[in-house]
Length: 509
Ligand SMILES: Cc1cc2nc3c(=O)[nH]c(=O)nc-3n(C[C@H](O)[C@H](O)[C@H](O)COP(=O)(O)OP(=O)(O)OC[C@H]3O[C@@H](n4cnc5c(N)ncnc54)[C@H](O)[C@@H]3O)c2cc1C
Image (cartoon, rainbow, N blue to C red):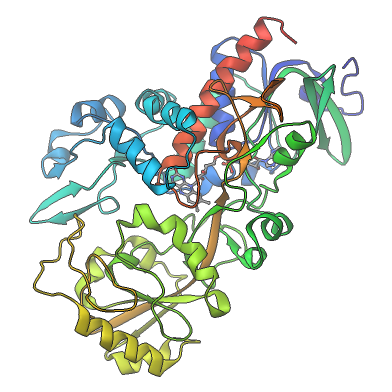
């Protein structure tokens, strides 16, 4: 490409770059910082305006999954943790093998072993690298560990969360980019890859209503999946998915995926699958940055979930929420009217996370189950009462309840048994939450190499093209372990950035 961006007055779009990063979320920022660390001249293109920058990463609660051997490892990432903070906390360990087992089990052994191994085995180093960019982390108490007998005990991984969630993560990463004077063009969506002799040599983007062509030795696509695009959701995920609420950004329209496929990239992974959760039925169609992830309702393992007929339709206690929440959104979508109610009694109220206490919550409360049944909008009251009574009678209450372990306090003899944490609903007041399906992100993506290079249809490499974050296919199938999205974005962003910088420096373009 010899043509510069003549039709723009924006000087940052008229320059020529080593590495052009498309997207403004966690994966993009990590890619940009990593490329810049290797000496590359970097430009970031963000489709969103400044105030909406940061993609889905901005909406996260900051769960960040990495392998660790014990508290000494955690201190390397979060040196601010004080001894008194740690006194009543049992972090245990989360080995690489446990992380690999979780990924394999949750994806029913479909995850790409090479990509998964890269993700897991570099996760601790990546967490340290991210912390080194000014991102602060703290113990995820009350989210991944409950207080029992005065002590918090982590049940498996996710020991540290990013302090202040996605907002603080993005604040720190953007500050690091600004400190390095990496230029960022907002409201500048990439629309097409520019190729010459089979190599990617730049991007065509839209800026202020015109197309501009920006030249770069390498392009890193880190612009999300197609979760914000109802047409693509219906096309790939299936009927009804166009009606799901979007938990995060409105800007992940699948454009990066489509431009890569048009250039001959190889589609990879679970194109009919996505991450989706129980989400307040009255939440807006896209995420709201003032609320972040708090429309989610993740504590169903401590209650029951019923549909319009009043029937239970999932095993609420099949596993810890972090192992089931991302696939149960799809189960809600299959129910009549696409909604459900999560029902709890007062015995477990203290275990419910802050998301159950926000002002914008769709909640019913009553002092008897009969009274509650009448308040569950859209639910057959008689059906619900029959379900609740049968459930209560089936709980094996001789087995002690313990929220920190798979306690095997199950129901016995129901059409769908609850396999852990089965407490009868018997202590007033009763409270219930009306939820629908909220989509988080899509699983289908591109095939990438260990360096983040995009692979073509015939197993070759598309020279000059890289992908990171949600755009990487092959990691997640059907389900997902919480906190892996940010780790995947940071890992593949970091590797893609480093390799793209080397590719540019080697003058291979
Ligand atoms: C409510 C919510 C809570 C979550 N909680 C967690 C959590 O606690 N832990 C965790 O690990 N994961 C969590 N996730 C998942 C996580 O957000 C994603 O997996 C991860 O952040 C994706 O990072 P990314 O950089 O690939 O995409 P994004 O952060 O979505 O970034 C994509 C970027 O690309 C931009 N873009 C799109 N199209 C274009 C274009 N054509 N040109 C230029 N730019 C474009 C977008 O504006 C955006 O800036 C959560 C997601 C949501 C929605």
